[in-house]
Amino acid sequence: MRRAVIVGSGSALPVRRVSNAELAETVDTSDEWIVERTGIRFRHIAGEGETTASLATDAARRALAAAGIDASAVGLIVLATSTPDQTFPSSATKVQAALGIDDCVAFDVQAVCSGFLYALSVAESMIRGGTADTALVIGAETFSRILDWEDRATCVLFGDGAGAVVLRAEEGDRGVLSVSLHADGRHNQLLYVDGGASTTGTVGKLRMKGQEVFRHAVVNLASVMREALERAGLTSDDVDWVVPHQANRRILDATARKLGLPAEKVIVTVDMHANTSAASVPLAFDTAVRDGRIRPGQTVVLEAMGGGFTWGAAVVRL
Ligand code: UT7
Image (cartoon, rainbow, N blue to C red; front, side):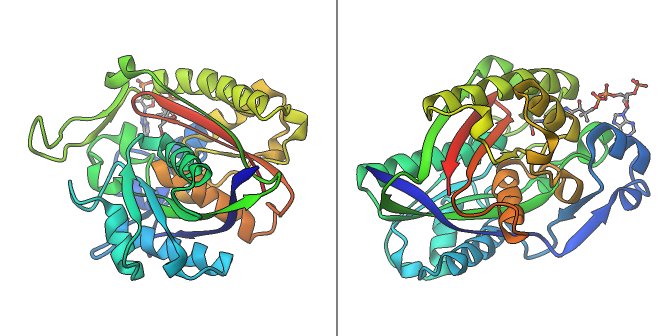
């Protein structure tokens, strides 16, 4: 059976790292509140010249190097972002140009924090269908540019960054085993940006009713993980690692508990990166590959939930 196999990963963070204490100098908050309610200690904030596409390109280069694959072999780039460099063209085409790829399929996917799961699903289907043999799947964001820095309930939660994986077509039993995706547009007003090209003509700022998002997140994530495992013919006992969307330490703990998974199997990077939306799953994945926790042969569940609402999970054998 032709499957899409993750053969390399990479990530990139802006140079500037901001601690909770540094934020508390300009925002009415405290290190104690942020750590206790979210687990976040640091986030990286993009500076001048650092953009979604530049971070995505750095992450993609590292993923290709890890895979030992030349950029010229890439036939497909799917980039998940809600903070593109321009309204159009896509940030994926900027990455393509920066990597010096003359011709390939390249486009962006927008599903906010679930974007990487959506992008992975699209790329995996296209690989199985024969559109490409090698794909770059990227999650990249600069949420710092759409935050209301006067709203302490949201601005302390997010950070910037990018993560990427290289998918390659292979015959066999490793690769993406299943993906489950969902959306429920009735919840638009719980997590949204109050601007857009077709409405205000502005980019807008992020707005969130955190407590209600929290409640939905735990329920939806536990159920979509169960669904993805079932589709793969596996149970939580077969899982080596869960790589969750890094929104809040309390959500990660509660979701793992619901599935009966020990906390030691959950990759946590929210303390170092905060919530980087579509970048958070591939960033966390790459962190755990590079520190030696995630290894070939293991079974990994990726999961995320975000604005829309959208949510999803994927089961991957490495
Ligand atoms: O990535 C997409 C998915 N997003 C999420 O999953 C986010 C989900 N939500 C959350 O993570 C949590 O709901 C938050 C971290 C956003 C908030 O935690 P909470 O425990 O739900 O706090 P809360 O909103 O109920 O606020 C509690 C108190 C309030 O004060 P009062 O009304 O009790 O006096 C807030 O004004 O904490 C106050 N507060 C803050 N205090 C210090 C809110 N933000 C801050 C802050 N620093 N930054």
